[in-house]
Amino acid sequence: MRHLPSLAALRAFEAAARHLSFKRAAEELHVTPTAISHQVRFLEDTIGMRLFERRVRQVVMTPEAQVLFPVLRDGFDAFARVIDGLTRKRRRAAVTVSATTAFTAKWLVPRVAAFRAAQPEIDLRLLASDDVMDLNAGVADLAIRYGRGPYPGLVTEPLVVDRFAPVASPRLELTTPADLKSVTLLHFDWRHSDPKNPTWPRWLAEAEMREVDGQAGLRFSDESHAIQAAVAGLGVALVSLTLVSEELATGTLVAPFGPELEGLTYHLVQSGERVVTGPIAAARSWLLAEMRPLRVAPVAPETVVKPQ
Image (cartoon, rainbow, N blue to C red):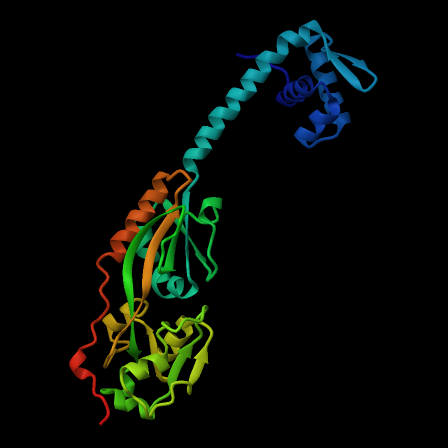
């Protein structure tokens, strides 16, 4: 059976000996210097020998303390290593994925359950922002970026070229572009102005629909809001077929006619400087597997009816 002094007293002595200061030992252990002094005094009384010479603003170890200190220091270090190793095994891995607000809401969030089923030991953290995240700084581990690329300093893989077409609730019973004369157009504001943005004026010009005002209708600050308005039957939205792939598959929305406008490309990007951990690699593989088979619902070209 072991006969050892109080663990609190041993900890107080070890910290005081390491710092050669009762004050700094107290700060480390979150107690008062007086408490450290009392614990050290208790240890000295227990073992029957002095451990420090107390001087003005200084403590000096006695020869006995110099024998005891390295044993306790190494022991406490060993405790810390073992406990840290045990708790590290229990810490859940987490991977942060950055994407635009619309892509996060319409594509990533509905698939979180599938990721948890495939990777139950990894927590997926979604960072929804239309601002570009600095992946080399560690703000996120992976990102879905929508643009032309390239992205210098990043490992980039193109995923899918986006397509845009009019979508609406089947309740509106739209069949030809001429039906747009009697419904509300749903718009969303593009973050960056570009003449190649798939907007209603551009689509109407492509479809040669001159009798419809491409600026009229309801306007939203975010594409996902325009999509929800279309689901609610408030009008017809010109949106990403990638983002509404689930709604098109279930029939919640329909793409009754073309033409389709080509958008930009979704890219999966990651830092070219940071170490790729196992969880990051697993999340990346899952995202690639989910995106690669993605095929937006085609819009039959024969349904395009141009006005005479």
